[in-house]
Image (cartoon, rainbow, N blue to C red):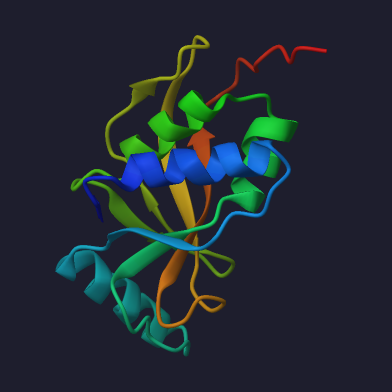
Length: 149
């Protein structure tokens, strides 16, 4: 996956918009590589699902903001690092019965004492013909953040 040059800036803008209680718009932030797009489509076809037409990826951020920032206590900067990590050219496609995503292949220090592999979850039907970056998950974040009260 490749983020556009201003992809992280656009992601930050949406997350900051949501933090103010406003609604963020779907924004193109990057696209799958040719190989990743083909692999996703092969896995979807093998599961009797429609292929993903476009390699382009959009981002809104409301679910991600709610789950990672509001509930888990991560900062916008933390989430930006998670997204940047998973948008590596070396990330691999993951596919289960319940989701299609990408996983980073390089462990990252999360700043809270954990070594994590970041995973992105994509929503592939709501924003047709594009994929939506729905969430990121820092797998291995066993030492949890102490939320401010």
